Length: 288
Image 1 (spheres, rainbow, N blue to C red):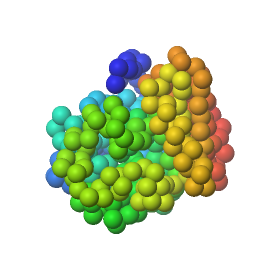
Image 2: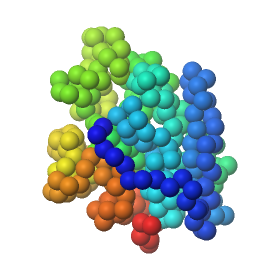
Image 3: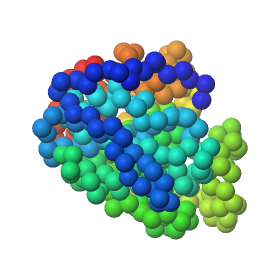
Image 4: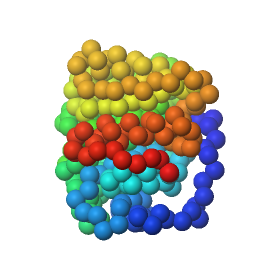
């Protein structure tokens, strides 16, 4: 995506107050190996859960890149599950969506074993991860969309979502739509009515959208997607919060790729405050 992420230290010590479980394995729909990294406060139970879906244009990215933010969310009282998925080099878009659904199912079926509450689940999605989160959530609530994509819905119910520089639209005749159309949907894209079903402004997605926080900036090449979607959500009286920075030096997906920036820290504090209102928690900490 043209973005260089802040250098990661894989040898970083685990904070004393957290437990981190790397590479917990499970299987996808096709029997393909997947994994999740799980973060939580030590000796904590019945924690609300945040599922993080990483970005990278579906060509790049992996779970460990979310570690700084996952540690912060965990320090604020959430169990965090950063889920993996195959990339387009080895799969197609529908199969990748199925991998995210497998991650949802892993949380639904097993997160209590790690101290999480599968009835209080939130999702964050960065860039292409936002697209995946939207599709996985919507088809789990829409039998029409699930049937069109030939995927099985997850039983997991999402309470609210936060999207960072979301790749929200894949149905437009723009550089995203033209580049990804065949890779995402194959020949299904030409079926009658399919475009309407995958339209984020259409009923199958919009009617099933949970409360949503979105962040963007003037330096985000997908800024207009977020601004356009905020207008649609407002017209439809859907609960939504927009964080839009005018600074052109704040790049695409800056809250994830540049977590040390003060603006990034503020975005994540607002994410926690947004989620907290749905579980009765109060914000207390600062991003490490």
